[in-house]
Image (tube, rainbow, N blue to C red):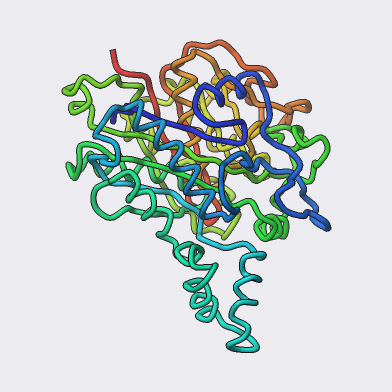
Length: 415
């Protein structure tokens, strides 16, 4: 499947050029949270995107704005269709739509005149009227997709999905499958997440999933290191224009890379923990290799899920060892999350974008903050400094809460 355009936005900045320069220089987009009060919270660091021009902040509004920015970059690069008329469907990974507590409280106060204790329907009625009318669409999961479909003129009903931290890769897979089935010659695959807020921090903190290394902020995310202590929430977006290889060649498009294979498996072992034997993750990676019709030793580099939690990093290593065998000892593996944090719903698409940039620039991004190696995870993690390397075939992993696992195989354009 041909990639003819892609875009990316993270806490490091807007666009591929800005992000690639920062990430290969080992710069961090993690910082002390200023968007909301963090008094009493154990974690006060995140990779929030605070530079978007929004009238007011809400997770759905920010998610929409970031997605739109990356779509523009991707569509402009692909040169496919016309402005506001994209000739294919939209597959969107987006977080569950929620309004933050300040907005909920405002709606509560607005509807309090009708009832002493308003229910959800009362809040909806309040959102439809007066100064809260603009908030009403953002109570609905499909609102982000509908806004993007209207702006960019995609075909058919937009497909919105949420498969936890695997969502971005899943959105790309849906586009690949639609083109393979012959449903369309092109697809717009997007993932976005702007949901760093106090309630989300509290939820993940209660799961003991978040890093509490608050000072200095850039040291908070430590994938694969022995002293890793959890992930760091972050925001961002990634967008891909996918086309059938034959259609892209026929119109003379510049092919930036190909999605060679996709793997996806569910793990019903636990809500947040993976199967202790790692079977679903192992089968996800094997599924991607089989779909791409390549052998394990053809993988030149692994863009790891690498969240920085104790269990995830160890299980990812065990799965890679099971599939790649002894080759994993010399195959470079790194985690973008050491610099941009965990962008949750958007992670799979953002990391796929960085994977293609690694191929184009013959450079591997580093795993930062790798100061104390973990002897139980003997990986070549491209420690603390980017590395020049010619790579052509990359495995990009995304493993989500709820046992939702996805892997992509990406390569440069075939000779």
